[in-house]
Length: 349
Ligand code: G6D
Image (cartoon, rainbow, N blue to C red; front, side, top):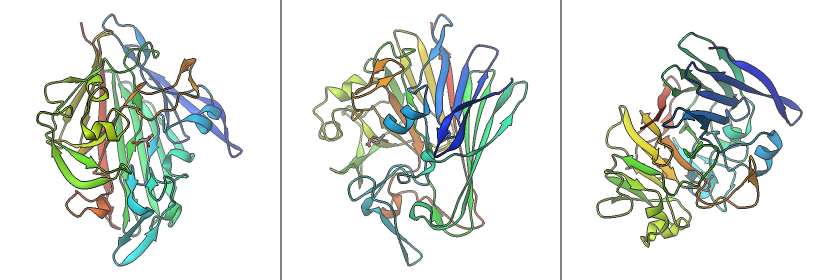
């Protein structure tokens, strides 16, 4: 599978490139070295028609002006960090406050907003791009020089694999994710309210008014958060459950996944027959149904707005550094941060 490299505008005077590869079935991946942004992902419907299933733009200007992290790698730490500060080994670190008093998604110049180095990988059955970035000690307030690699590969089985790898020279925090918004209708024909999600998770993290975890895990049993037998996204939109209301009528919640190895979530669009299976090594996933997406811009000609995409942000529990009962995301010198998430697309009759 050949990987095509083409120019995609500039950021701060630096050239941005887009990389595109197509497998033998017709599945196509396009991504940028800016933020490792996935700009397009073509997947089959039940008739084998390949259409784009992720929210994205055709110009770097639109990404710089409008994008709520469309398709981007988020880090050093995905999610929110309370009060934009944390303590590690007796030292206090202050981070940029880019959402009120809190720190969101690694800060305004987090990994989603930098240009990564890119190395093309071409193979017969699997090709892709290895993105790498050296985040200097103190970048966005985080300690330690972090060497990060994120590798996207596409294979002939219509699978996109994302492999994450990081090392540091001093103790720091790392919790990476990909922030793609999926819409399986194809080329944004419909919103995602009729999409169904099946997810084996018994508990979700309660959020407070600032969308920070309170530290409490709530049982999904008998609530619109129970996806174990499959549920329409719309259920969370019409729900009066306080947690659905709190996040703007929908979902914006981390869920605790029941097992870490190949834990699978299945998102499907009954009308097109498109299905996305997400398998991850991560212990949790943030389900976000774009409840707060503004209706002020166009997404390849379609009006932006609520419920245009579903994010399944596989990651460690958010703000773990302030919750000792959560799995932590600290990384020591000499340790390796390594995790993988696989997205498999099918067209189901
Ligand atoms: C909103 O609360 C949500 C986040 O979860 C999401 O990542 C962001 O929009 C893009 O802040």
